Image (cartoon, rainbow, N blue to C red):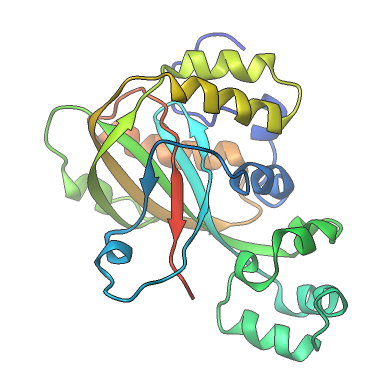
Length: 243
């Protein structure tokens, strides 16, 4: 694959050429992986809550500058409700109502049920994502990010995080035949990495499911060009807020 110069998802070339909808099963395989990552990332509101809540987490996709998580997917209500109704033992109307209220797919049905559906990506319409970009020294100009139309919001967190050279991550990808093997290799790689205090920029946006992964890369590359980004891969468990 050669040396990496620009921002990209550390995935096979054939996957990066797919749309988010087409790559959904691959994305889901990564994000449902229960990795033993040394860092937990969440929006500050989750930690500020006084009520005890049960949280679920996902494993993000490694990138040259941090990592990226698809935190929510929204689907075609009519088609998906009809397909899921029998598997969940509820009426299509109940499912359609939940989808219309904005309940994302990963909250509507457990992963094993979603996996049984054929061509789930065909039902997807919109996704929300969050890119975690490690920051080096230097000021962060908020106006530079606010000018990007796709950015919905962003914040900066201070964390103790291990960083790995993306070339080392790429080497593990090239050795791996399956996504599960790739992630297990990354677990070992990050377990031995040096941990130190870093700033992580968490920038969020949305797009249509027909958007190609390479186009998502181009969107985040706009951020990397505007901030003092570090070319370092990080992995973590991204906590999701309860419904």
